[in-house]
Amino acid sequence: MRAAPYLLAAPLGLVLGAFLLVPMAAILVVSVFDYDSVRLIPDVVLTNYADVLLSRVTWLTYLNTLKYTALVWVLTVGIGVPIALFLAFCVQSAALQAVLFLVCTVPFLTSNVIRMISWVPFLGREGLFNGALMGAGLIARPLDVLLFSDFAVVLAFVHLYALFMVVPVFNTMVRIDRRLIEAAVDAGAGPWAVLREVILPLSKPGIAIGSVFIITLVMGDFTTVRLMGGGQRASVGLMISNQIALLQYPAACANAVVLLALVLLMIAALLRVVDIRREL
Amino acid sequence: MITGLGRWLLGGFFALFVLFLYGPTLTIVLLSFQGPEGGLTFPMRGASTAWFTRLFQQQAVGDLGTAFTRSLILAAMVMAATAVVSVAAAVAFRRRFRGAGALFTLTVASLIVPGVLVSLGVGLLFNLLGCDASWWNSAFGAQLTWTLPFGLLIMFAVFNRFDRAWEEAARDLGASPGQVFRHVVLPIIAPGVVGIALFGFSLSYDEFARTMLTAGSTNTLPLEIVGMTTNVTTPVLYALGSVTTAVSLLAIVAALLAMRALRPRVKPAP
Image (tube, rainbow over all chains, first blue to last red; front, top):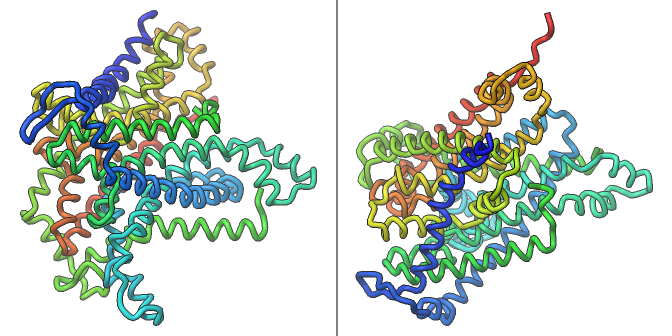
């Protein structure tokens, strides 16, 4: 009986140890290896880090990735909060709430790649947006910047990941004690005051959890930027995957360590501002 | 709670959001029935199932049938492993044990490490150990680092609402720990277990980043699809999208039906 929790927890520990901890350690080790065009040379050199940190291209790529993250974060918060407000406070019946919540969740369980491709008929040169704009006489020639641009990349990110904001925000909002809102209304607060003084402060942990997801998903992404950016846009994830394709493993690993450190720093900073422990 | 104008505005915004979520997918489903002369965008040039027929013929880009079968088997493996490992760990976490905090931190860390890094690390590890990376070993493990945290957190939520009185009653009646789990705990948590099984299946079936460097030369369906996007410029791509989305939806419907059937019912006393 004493051993039972250990036996039950062991599979989880073993899987995460073997496929998360050890691989991250491997990245750390290889990040100081030397290499030439054909093989890895076990060594302790800092040239890989120097290459990452001293290159102008890397800095621009990191800045561009941070720009995507900031834009997607603002947009997903802007979408997630009203959607969660609607689900939590406008829908009275629990059954309808469950159905609408499911409606929001289903796309998350389908293929991301297909969901990206599905923007082609809208954003392409002969797509619906260009057709509509030309039909309305707003533009004379089709716009090329709709697909394969920052606009397309950010749009796809928001489309793919908005749900990661909606769900945690909704979860905290439904658990807000309704008596607090009644008390605020009795004390003379209007709808905006209730939202600003009661609902939003109490929803902060949910927004923080959603933000953690957005930061990790966007900072580490490479497929969305590759497909929607059409090879014209840069991101750290894409840079790492290009280095891997060129078999420059130590360079990719040094880049990966820097990226992971940056992501963890961003999350640590966020968690200093908002305490999410009650939510877990 | 919110009434009047605010309610209508939020409702309208929600409707737009749903349109935003589903509109593009519905569009490519429609366009996958494009006539044989049609292209990737509107207008529809007639209607046909030509692109579906072409999809099931041998493709120039690779063997879709094999990749599809492989993805389904891998998703089933991830689904089973996610359900068993998460439930076992969640049961363990109901009691104190040494290392619980560290294991929880590791699980949350698994959620926030970008997928491309997991892919790189696992691929590299297999490389260093001299093992051949393939879909059933390294890709399987890499995908579990994404599905298990979701599974564990969902099981935590399920056990939070679990009334321990049922277990105590069974124990008082002389049930062994195994019997308590099989006859009392499992039936009550069953819908939640189906939920994490669905998560495991869907996340694995659609995963790209964690599989990219860990599947070796054995492509899964998402890897084939990404490969196709660069060199296929016909509605075959949409036909494939429609088929794989249909598979995902079937999995969701099956899970919902199973949850409904397994929902614990309190029988009225005779």
